[in-house]
Image (cartoon, rainbow, N blue to C red; front, side, top):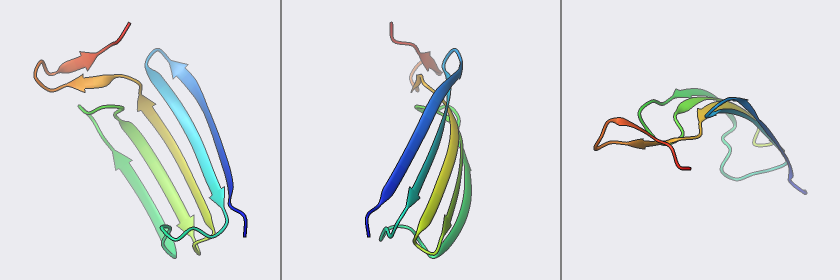
Length: 81
């Protein structure tokens, strides 16, 4: 079966972006059923990610993240020109 992959993304405001991704079709790495939520901070591309997988056939992810990288030595965001 052919895998169908759809990804949409956009800008919310300066340094903040969203992304919606879905996959239809059999994929070995997707478990039978899974719901997850991840929140990261003080790391590269920090943000929130929600994920839902069902029957190794349907996977959907929604995320909001920061486009900047985190500088651990200076404990601040790095913004590239």
